[in-house]
Image (cartoon, one colour):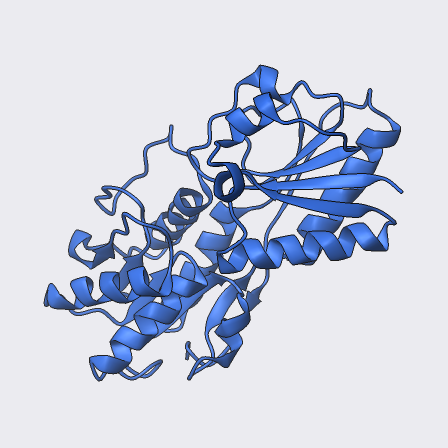
Length: 283
């Protein structure tokens, strides 16, 4: 039986835990066994350092990178094929499978605007953001979603007020979503829609809005990304962009199988938009 290694920085965050579970299911369906390595949590290493120092045999690797990960091209030169899940800083060297986060951000913002919200709050940018443009040199899942939101805003002649942008300097969690939403509310600027860059942020924002006496979705529509387990069980259930995990992990395992059995093939990149799951946090 072939052994696949799934290398991730951590598996403790909701999206990553669901991704790992989906990888295991897809790999088992194809007859592969999966070893999961959390290189940051287990060894305190970056992706690059882990690739350059890892030991042990495997037949192929699924590598999950987060925004800001820098990997030396030589680190990808391993005795087994690698498929990157998500953005890869060294495109063209290894296979990639990822969601089209720009399109996903555009589609969810378009939905909120078409359903009547034009004074939008944005929760989750991890750095200074003026509401107008994203540095072209910056690529990550979150910033690509922001790019899509901006595209929809321009199409509908909607302007993001910088006072309604909830920057999060730490990870995307329920707590950071709650605190960012409270800071936005404290600005005194009115808003009728909240776009959160992932579901835990949106769940935290919903707790804050409930505490503030704002009705969802009558007063404020709220949306998120990734369809984590808890999203469907919120009150009201959260409208979200599906993580498309079954497609991502299935395609990644298929690409890895191709690399195992045909190692001379040219690197490929598979990308597609994710569906929106309409629930009662939007009108």
